[in-house]
Length: 242
Image 1 (cartoon, rainbow, N blue to C red):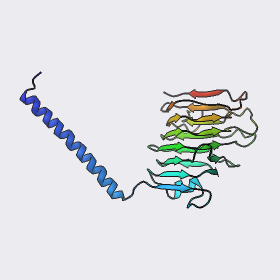
Image 2 (spheres, rainbow, N blue to C red; image 1 turned 90 degrees about the horizontal axis):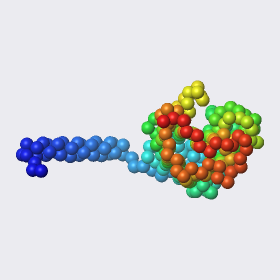
Image 3 (tube, helix red, strand yellow; image 1 turned 135 degrees about the vertical axis):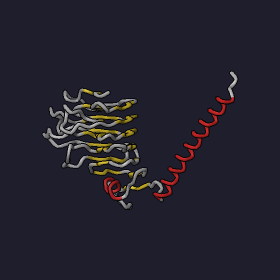
Image 4 (cartoon, rainbow, N blue to C red; image 1 turned 180 degrees about the vertical axis):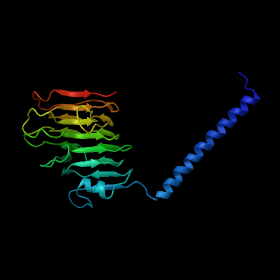
């Protein structure tokens, strides 16, 4: 259908405005990058021979948004709180382990990803318990996503999220995304993509997505693959939310 001269002028005006907006946005981003004067960095964590021997020290002392933290093969006994948008990359699930300390603090989670607008990639680790014997306090999740954060959790092994020995305590999750008001005095939400992980020897549930604003894409789900089961270890995936 022929386009009238008036319609053609309108199309040209809209196109010009769109191009102007894109150019202005690009200039704003460029100014922001130039003002920061900083490119994304890669930080190395190794048991020996590196500036950082603890993952949490690298997160707190040096990492900024956009950085990558590469962790050498070995076992790192610590609880992590990740509140910056970073990539955490291990040497492979069979090589790099984040292991639960003998005394766990807070909700007893091994890796907590927290903060509105925070987006974290977590890959290449074994995340391992177990928790303390006969202690029903806490949550004991391998990874807990909360506070509006998003996590891309892929190619990890999460194991032994349980008390020693297995018992009837309602705790022990491979991955937990959010928690509802009926389950906690501090309800919270998060989102996640959970891909190609192996979750074994959990006491309560392999993967939980909980609370109204929580959401997760899970594919393929491999909870309890090759893991030991008990009467408490019965629910591979539970979703409560959207």
